[in-house]
Image 1 (cartoon, one colour):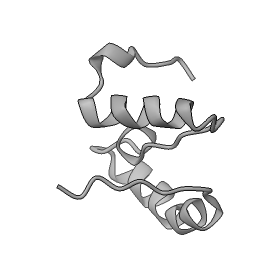
Image 2 (image 1 turned 30 degrees about the vertical axis):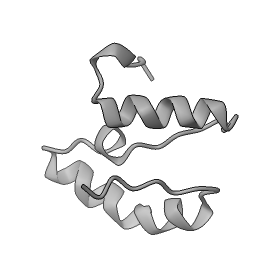
Image 3 (image 1 turned 135 degrees about the vertical axis):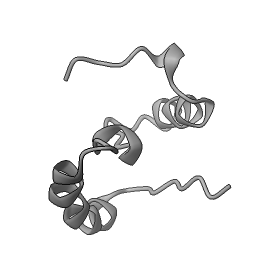
Image 4 (image 1 turned 180 degrees about the horizontal axis):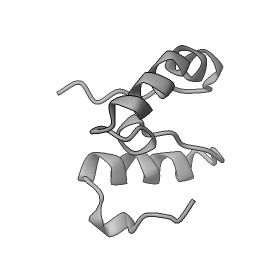
Amino acid sequence: TRGLPVDELALTIKDVIRFTRAMEFRYLCVDALCIVQDDDGDKAEELPLMGTFYKQSALTIAAVS
């Protein structure tokens, strides 16, 4: 809700932001940014919802290496 300085993000995330904009998608969910990685409570709340995110997404991009 506060925004993130794009220039401080990892190159992989910058690339997917550019791609998302080029494809004219309105929304982008980046797990590493949307789920507080070092908060077990947030993970417990958010991880069960991931199946719904993937099921309802128009496109899923995964960085695998």
